[in-house]
Image (cartoon, rainbow, N blue to C red; front, side, top):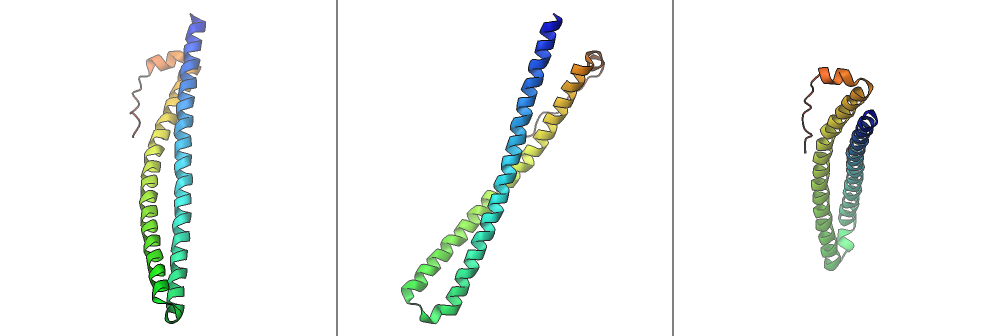
Length: 134
């Protein structure tokens, strides 16, 4: 019976470690995606600035077709910047949601560690952790 209890405790601890790793990976992935989105937005803004500078500097020398092409490209780039900003907000919201979940999992792991080290104390102490935020 003691071995079965130990196996069950180990199984629960392993499952909680897997969940914690999943949430931690999600948070890290969200942070990486957020950084990438910021870099892409900066790149697009720089490109837009360069194109606007070229239009101003060379507008007299350009044909109407070239001006139309640059205007269309500028519009496309602005739409891309808006899309990246939206993606950035979405990723930021996901990151904000992942952080409380990770904290919940960390508390859960700490509680399980405490139960493993002193099973009698865990019976005396009644904990009711709040569910993860999604």
